[in-house]
Image 1 (cartoon, rainbow, N blue to C red):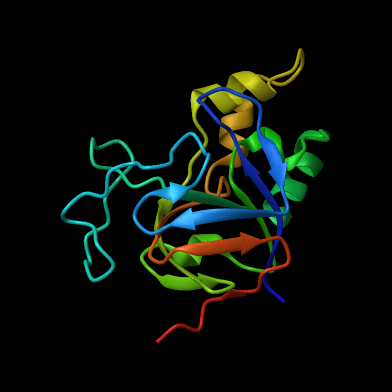
Image 2 (tube, helix red, strand yellow):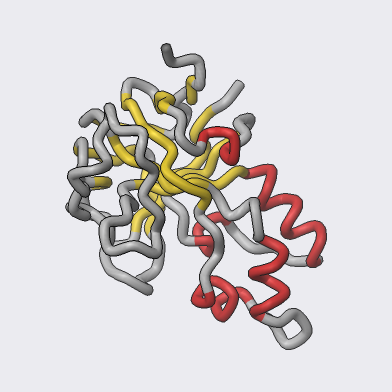
Length: 171
């Protein structure tokens, strides 16, 4: 079963991630209380738009991010680390869903409608935060390539809770 197993937010950039049992989300704005809340929705990227806006553009959508528990486990196994999900700075930790397949797709998290925008590839900050004396930031980033998660647009308002089912069978 595909589900949300952990929820995290940070009140500001580079602040510690806080764990939650539930968060309020608002259509076109993000997670209430998160550092990216109220990010402007570009006119070209609406629920009915087929345009996928990339993060490196000024109009990028970054309402909510996801990462797979399975990808985190593989990352830790390959590098011999014990990195916790919050350290990857994604909002939702999932189980049982292939996030890469959801780019450009509409899906639901509980009652909330979401649209996958792009892969959430790791940045230099993640590499620096997770590097060790024996594992470089570059190695960290390369190991997370294509499994760093998903950036998504929130298409409806409501509450996301741990345990919410993720449904990709949206018509």
